[in-house]
Image (cartoon, rainbow, N blue to C red; front, side, top):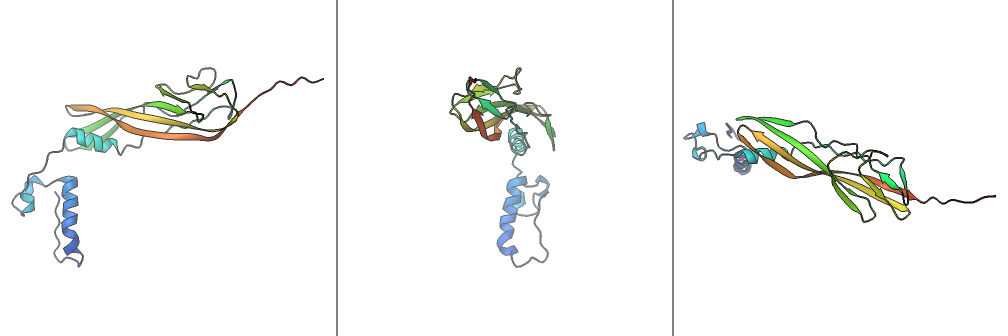
Length: 190
């Protein structure tokens, strides 16, 4: 139940009480049992759909970020560089208790990689691994220093009682700044 009652209101209450009440009601709705206790409380509580509850919770979930590395810490032109994402694509389910049961959200990620040289690859639905088993690789043509950015795009399924649905639109991101790309040349001596 939400109520704003002040026996001896402070001086600021005259200007803020209406705003506080509006903010509380917009967040929690009117208490249905309070009908008749005051003019404003006579309004029926607006129903909040399970989809709205799931969407609000989805936006608060601390989704994991990737922790990219490219061993051995540099690349050689003309040779594939294997990205290790060091993240997770399927974290444990997230849950929140609600008045009508437990809301459960199961998140799934996929990776996109901006290699810093104008090449964007993905989506990848498996973790990147080092050579020789890696599935996320790129071959640089030019020597330089590049920022490699790994974006994890998130989708999810949710259920709350008999209601269920899908969510999306969130992402986490990490980068490898100043990733060096070198060139190797054979030199004949002697």
